[in-house]
Image (cartoon, rainbow, N blue to C red; front, side, top):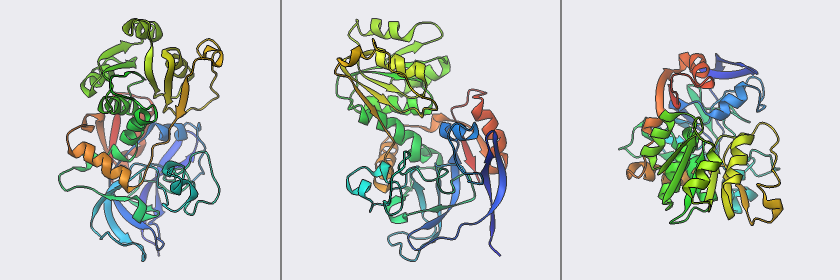
Length: 358
């Protein structure tokens, strides 16, 4: 009889429960990791609310830190007992998308077909990380050894949040001397603030409604703080930039209001880098779009995954260039995952990210 494990299972909208599942059986290219730390993502809340569809019975979660329990027969270069992370996006390394350099859009183990969420498989198309054990597909492309000097909490943001936030700055092609506005300073927006600073932006404008998040943004490198509870963000950013507008606006919430404001603060020829996961159609206002004549760029990003991306992000953490440990505001055991979801979904008690320890 198959060994059982605890897992956070999607049942139906508004219902994710702690249940039991068999420990996964791995194939030749896979690895089984024992999860030592994971977290809940804003995207998991979209799943909980029924705003992003997944199959009933799926284990949720896509941010794993763990220890290799078992390796597939064809996997080389790793050993059992090794500490690893795997990205939220798990490219095969052999698909057409991977070989075109678009690792995030690797839609399947062998690149057959394409789907809008690219290579996001954990907690989307296959069982995810909010469990005691996790099957990692294409292990040789996706397992990144954790350096000895780094703790689980130090690397917890690498699989998704740090990769996505920095990815927003990368996609926006932030340059030395740029002025960058970042709309929403949740975990992803804060990591976009880190990314913009690392890429050379010299005037970073952080926008949020929560003063405590703006304080963290300042610690992460923001130069100007815009509290939308007190001022109109578009007017305030125009004032800060002397009417010029920003070189890059990063949208990190996934709502019409922030998308539109990000478009309105761009200078002519500026770039809107969109990170949010949207759950309804977006409208582009004619005036903000300059009737299509503004030389604007609107770019979207799904963060790259794979072991090289994870290695680089862990280098960023290990070098001291970024510290994301302050993003973890609450800690729960896997047994309390339903309580953790309730807290996170309602954004109570100043929550930014929760650490879930199986």
